[in-house]
Structure formats: structure tokens, C-alpha cells
Image (cartoon, rainbow, N blue to C red; front, side, top):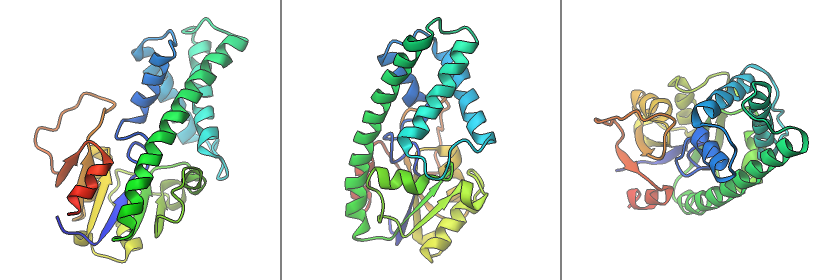
Length: 237
């Protein structure tokens, strides 16, 4: 596959190894024995995501650690208020902090792995980031050593366009100063990354990890399907 520039998604692609963030958090709940079912957790996750999406809670200078802490606080408050968690006070905070520490360490490992791959690719191609994020992506990139790797950053909260709108990927192509045919888009979401990027003429690489649902795509429009971002180095050959 020939291409001249690369557009990367961020969440679920560079920070979780292709695992949907909802599943990423759920597995941390499991490892830390938070006594709720996955179905109840999903309610809390959706509640927190919608609240963050509808309100300017995450400020532009917030680190990812702080962003994640706020997400978990909203989830645990939901679980406690609805009566799904009997723990209160110190015990509730301790439970939340255990999940936070677990998740953050996992993200540090995934981002370190992704950074190694991007450093190798950066020597050959200009890289652009296109992400649905809260307005603090630059701080987050710096936090995990991704600063100075991208020639452009297109963040939904800044440009007021969100995936799966193909227009956000067109902004990424414009940032590369290329035509879509010369650009490959790398992402973990089939619906939000692969389909819209393909629709404007970009090549696509789907990092197929654990999704939020069990939806299957028997006929994929992705040009390449990988399970680990390091496989991009083989696609490049």
C-alpha cells in the first residue's frame, strides 16, 4: 500500500492498543473487584460520557490523569447515587483510586509502545492527529511524549466537527497538504474512523481490538486490518 502521509486517531488507537475505552475501564473494574455487573457499569459509563460531552467540565489545561479521574468520579457517583454500590466515603474513594491507578499505568504502557512506532514512522512520513477530544489533547500528547510528533492536530472540541463526520478527516488531509488518495487513516473504530475516512478517498488501516459491542463486519472496507500498531511498520514496507 502506497501513501505519503498518515492520519492517526487518538483514543482507543494510541492509548489502549485498539481496545474501546468503555471496555478498557470495565476490565479495570474487574481486576479491582468493583462489585457491579457489566450492564450496570455500562449505564455509569454512558452517563459520565454524556455529561462530559454536554458540559465544559474538562478544561484545556487538564492532564489525562485528571481527565480520567473526573470520568471515574462521575461513574462512581452514579453507581453510588443509584444504589448499585454500597461502599461510601473512604471505601468508595479507595475503590475509585485503585481503578484510576490501574488504568493510568496501562495507558502509560500502551502510549509508550505507540510512541516507539510513531517515532519510526515520523522519519518517513508527516503525521497528523484527528481526534474527538475535550479541548486538552495537546496537554495529553505532551504528558505521554507525543509532542512534536505531529505536523498538525485536528481536535473536535476546537474545530466543532466530530467523527463520524467525514469533514473532520478532510481537515486532517488539508493539514497534510495532500489529496485523500495519498493519505492513510489509522483508527480503532470501524464506524467513526474507517467508514468516514474511506468515504473521502483515504486509504485505511483498522486496528481491530475489543469493541464496545459485538458487532461484526463480515465485509470490511478497510484496506488493511491489524491487531497491534507495530504492524504498521510491516504495512509500510
